[in-house]
Amino acid sequence: MKRALAVFLSVLMFLTIIPVVGAASTPSFSDVPRSHWAYKEITEMAAKGIIKGYDNRTFRPNNEVTRAEFAKIMIAAADVDINKRYVEQTFKDVPRHHWAFLYVEHAKPYLTGYKSGSTYTYKPDKAAVREDIAVALVRLLGYDQKYKADLDQLKKFRDYDDISSALRPYIAIAIQTDLMKGYNGNFRPQDPITRAEAASLLYRAILDRGDDESKIVFPTPGQPQPEPEKINISDSFSDTKLKNWDTDKAIGNWEVASKQVTAESDDDDDLDHYLLPLRWNESDNVKNYELSVDVNVVGSEGLGGLYFNGKDGKANVVFIQKDRVVLGKVNDVEDDDIDIISSSTYKLKSSNRLKVAVTDNTVSIYLNDQYLFGQQYVKQEGKKLGLYLQEEATKGAPRKTTYLDNFTFKETK
Image 1 (cartoon, rainbow, N blue to C red):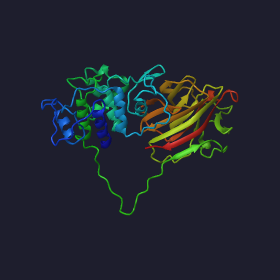
Image 2 (image 1 turned 135 degrees about the vertical axis):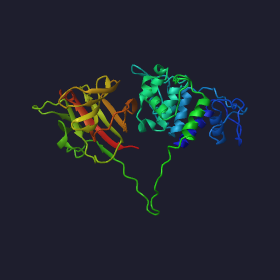
Image 3 (image 1 turned 180 degrees about the vertical axis):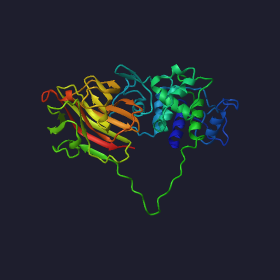
Image 4 (image 1 turned 90 degrees about the vertical axis):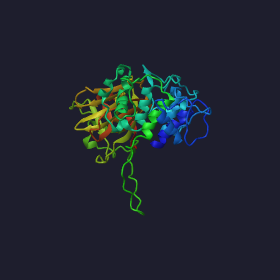
């Protein structure tokens, strides 16, 4: 992580202007006097070769960075390999011919964006602001998975209302962990990021923090320790016996038809939700994983997908309907009510590739290999997971039916 953050700052220093003179043993910059508020951070990081100035011995501490340039920084910081094969466009204002297209698309896990209706924009030429870099630092360091946000931390700032509501958990964590600080009672979330601020922030993140160190025990020489095998289960439903699935504990009657799976209820039950649990070792301490499935509709309105966090008849569900994708919670399979957690607009297709990525308490939803939306603080309460359908998804069978196909479940880092 420290290497990635060093790259982050190095790229930042070189984005817009041709660099610098060779490193000096005690570098100094004509525009960063000893009285400058970030003199120590800039000088010490320059002395270690992490940052550099320009060929006229200036540092230009007040230069701003655009959001497009910021995306490129994120790629370097996260050490992401650019995949130049076909990448779908997410942002209306960053088309494929834009110089930052691949950087923006590959850096989405760290970036902030904008949404209006069903349209996403990135505003690449606007300045990156302090709340942008707060999100980036918190996610780069993994602090959004390690710490719970205390939103009360933000109420001490007079400009609390200027902080984008969706970003407040990240800002709170940045404050709690001393990654960022306020100034004279303000956080200044919409102020552009300058090179001096970047140097100061990265100094505290790299050189002035010792919480990344931990004591370890090395394996006995000559006795290499095998890596535990990661879970990777898939099913294309060519086997009608559903051997990968715990049909004895299923909710509803599930069956394979034309190498796809669907469900129905008995005439004498009152089910509104059908759950088919996967057979896997639920005692494994798996907190990071991905579920995916094809949701194929024949005259129906979707209403099917995946479930996880299953326990005692309750579960989180992700399903597609006619015009939306929904993340919710089912508390009673005989009650059609669903507690909606979050959702996003989406136009149902005849075939829809749904993916749910769970990282600790964060859930990310993808459709057709494109990120759609995410939700934090979805507590992992249960281990059961698998396929999900609503009663309405198969009520009009066989002319109106939702089928599920090509399921995968794999453990991730």
